[in-house]
Image 1 (cartoon, rainbow, N blue to C red):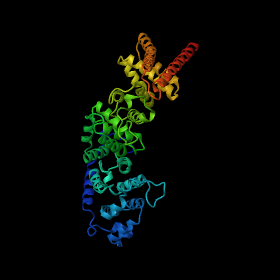
Image 2: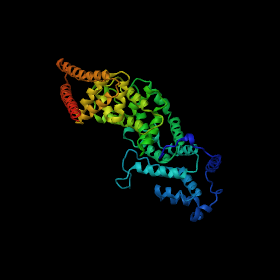
Image 3: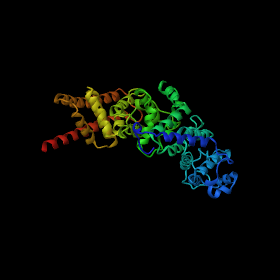
Image 4: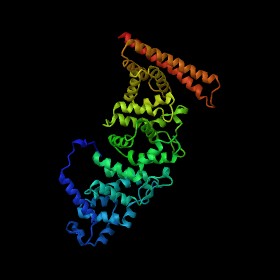
Amino acid sequence: MASRINTSFTLIPNQKYRRSNRRSSCFSNNLDSDSQPLSTLGNFKALPLEIFQIILKYLSVKDISMLSMVSKTVSQYIINYISTSSGSKRLLLQDFHNLELPGRKQDSSILEYYKSLGLLFKRCTLLLPTKERLKYIHKILAEVSCFKFNGCAAPMQCLGLSCYGMFLQTLTAGWDELECHRVYNFLCELTNLSRKMQTIVFSKPGSARKLELRIRLFCRNVLLDHWTHRSDSAFWLTRILKPWPMVNQARLLYIIFGPISPQDGQVVWQKMIEEPTDESSLKGLADAIKLLYDTGVKEWTADDVISLVDELSVVPREWLLENNARLLILSGNNICFTFMASKAVNGRAIELAKLIVFLALVCEKELYCMDWAVKMMQKVCKVFSTPVERSNFLQSVANAFACVIMEMLQSIMSGDRDEEDRSFLNLFHLVHAQANFHKEVLYLTMNTLST
């Protein structure tokens, strides 16, 4: 799917349906060697079908793919070869637990192999309607257990789903939205994906850890990770999220892109609510949010994305504000400002002031430019409609700095310190953040007065 097509303006002539039916019936005959004309076989017409299939055994997948474009008859001969047990066994490599292919150069990967195989199937089934195309391909791929939702006993060490995803990406590249909708619905029906998602979004977080992991791996490896165009990734992510209410969308987003345990790959639900986290734990979530916001997907408005971010910050419970601030910074200026402006418009100035404090803290910790946080605050100030509201907001920011510093200090004085003295280090960073923040405010004020 190289580009978006507005299907509401796409008219399909009746002739196309007649042609599709003709192709489908031709395919269903499965090419009997006695009934099919051999005139389009060229120099192969003198060869028995068995000899033709023996020749195919000596050709690479790329060569067979090129050969399939010679003629319709040759293409169907190749389809028959793929449908044989020997043909499918030879073509469907299943060395998913070993990254290197035997007999190939060391830099060759099984992912590239399945990309070539996807192109072969794309060319061989070119004349079929989408529904028949998918049924045939599923019939062939069903022999590979690692392509199934629960097919592999060691999914974290298996490339099966990634190969399946690469195959599907190559197969469906260039298809319009209507066809891709059919592909998604076909996969959902095949795997019972919607019912599985329903189970995890209505269960207590972490109560079905293995199912959460399986859904994450299937969505990432099969549907999302292999696209080169961001608009394509946004399309498939939209298919996953949009059937659900906003609160369930946030839960699914966390399961698919949230932090995981390095030991078993399972979703870590307490990561955002117990302690400040790092960039790597939030990058996947931030990239997904930017994907929905920046690609102009018609199903998502700016308000939808901001509401999703708001819901996400309480999954499974309210996040630490530092983690919330870090997510906004990673999500980019537009999302960060829109999120903060929404709070300003909705009368949540106290929350907004505290968020400014933690934006400054993250900037200090990560050595980001502190003038970014000051300019963001200045930009948000303009959202307030009256000078009194702006003045009250600035006062709230100053009070928030003092309040957060006192809270951290009281926590340390009460003996709430860990072995690494992270609480004391956090206070150290916050005091420096306040100093650098106010320094940038003074610079901005003096520069304004001098101009």
